[in-house]
Picture 1: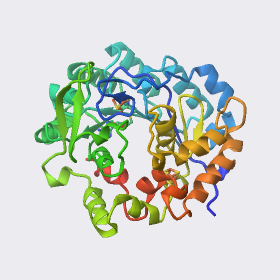
Picture 2: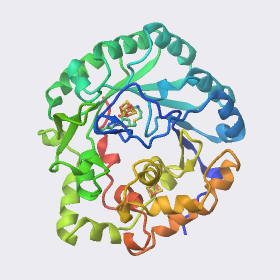
Picture 3: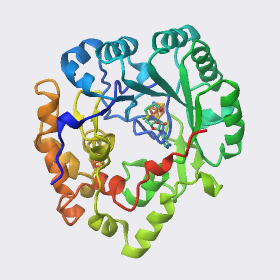
Picture 4: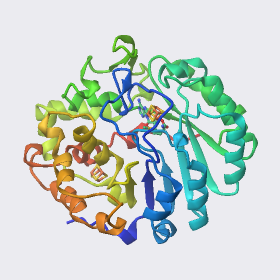
Length: 374
Ligand SMILES: C[S@@+](CC[C@H](N)C(=O)[O-])C[C@H]1O[C@@H](n2cnc3c(N)ncnc32)[C@H](O)[C@@H]1O
Ligand code: SF4
Ligand code: SF4
């Protein structure tokens, strides 16, 4: 049986906050144009970090990803203090921060660059277009503001990377954006072939909004719940996630997606990459996917039983850092039960669906999202 060994962890993915200034339609925090009602607004303070994340643990890490599932890290009030603290504990850390970039003024970004420029610190800006078209996916952001912030950060020595999620409405802008990224001295430009449309193939509960329209279309709502426009998959084949074809093949081969997931063998990414995930509520999970799946019970209130195996395990185990150590949680029963579930023969008998759909040996939708950087 696979073992989660605390001493082997090298990468921490931490969700600093569940707050966000944007409202991207395919983001888990949003449902029909509004923030999900069940989402708790939670956040790490510097004091929490000092109290709950052992210094010795920070010293053993190589990478910290400031990303998350429900929020954007630049919304965390103590962000800069937390970054400084992480570097104080381990100056050799690589820290990657993922953001929409559309908050604060240029001075804030210059200051961030000056405090991190001598470190292995990277900002990954999610900018899905070469002009205001980016705002069709990055709702409530301003392209002009993001670019000005990125410029200010880069000009003071900050290392910036541009991630561009491709849809039908912005696919004609990829090359223009790549050029702009070079002109502005971004370190890299990467297109992201979203895997989120695939949810339509394996999630059927209507509290997961992937279920509403036909495959390849995702509605964007106004705050009153009326459809404003529709996000669509790009037409250009090279911008489509390669696992799309594999998923359809598996569904045809097995008759339906559940039969495929029931039997798929699992190769755990978290174990392979020695990763761990900590949520904004200070709970510990093997990865962000299991966290998000647990939230199908706590936040989304999903009814489909096949989506709830992770949530049922969660209800039986305490994953909070507030009253137990990171090591005890990581090497404890929840993690063990997740790993044991990989050997169960069917979802209906307790096999974890999040693990089957993300770490099945023949389909890796997350990895397939990325292309080689320029
Ligand atoms: C919830 S966000 C948190 C970080 C930050 N707020 C951001 O958007 O970059 C986590 C990741 O989801 C990605 N994401 C958001 N919408 C997406 C979509 N439609 N397809 C693929 N990835 C998406 C973001 O680019 C980011 O890398
Ligand atoms: S910026 Fe990130 S956290 Fe905020 S809504 Fe978009 S994807 Fe979600
Ligand atoms: S989804 Fe499951 S199998 Fe995949 S990394 Fe997370 S815990 Fe491991």
